[in-house]
Image 1 (cartoon, rainbow, N blue to C red):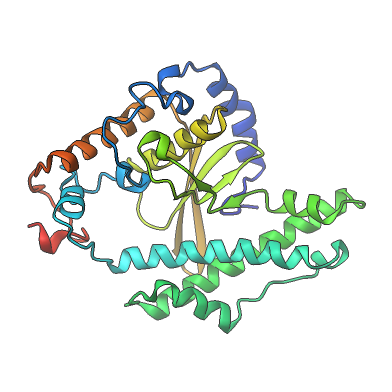
Image 2 (cartoon, one colour; image 1 turned 30 degrees about the vertical axis):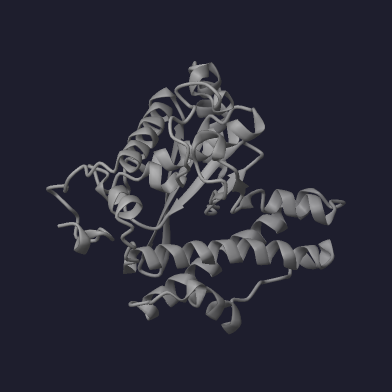
Length: 307
């Protein structure tokens, strides 16, 4: 069974027999480990912070979006694609939080019979998040319902599976096995010149994997987003974070399709993230306009102020 943040049997086998052993054998330059934040190249040259998502993004190849936002103080336009992604992320956050809260407030015996309904109140709480303008409201409502039901069925299945093997398990152990992730984990990235209020999509501590869910099309730089959080985790906790996973989620004919991208957070990704950070900080500090991207994409949230 596939969950957004949880791995099936084949994926666990790939991790345990393939990617994790490979990552342990692969040499990672110690200068690129987050715990060496006090030394170059990780030590920030400039005395201000940026969000991980802003450092990692390469939607604009010239990085002019950073110049417009940080130097000219132009407000980013929240388009329909961004709204959709924000609301679906909010759905996942609310679902996992509500699941844990509900199960902790009842006995183990009742957990496998409990189905957390998406009530009208919960739906409105998601839709009203940040008072955003929703253009394709009915479509998003259907996707939220599908996402909620998809996750609920699989959590129930997982709980029943655990209870069938562990008849004397307690509620805390049951929940930690059935829902083994922390969502919106708060991280202080200031050691690396990043925001002091970072939030990861999810961290699976049983495998020490940073997970990031995406509801749009694949982008090569998405791995940099995970890399930034891995560096931050290393800086804070001083243990290696070698594996990342992007969960690409799409909707087709009333079904949810999952495509997971597992990868090692290697030297190349770490170096690219730091280079992005340094260049974007330089643009801001020097107020240096990098120029318009000749192939600006139609959905760029700065397009009307740029081209």
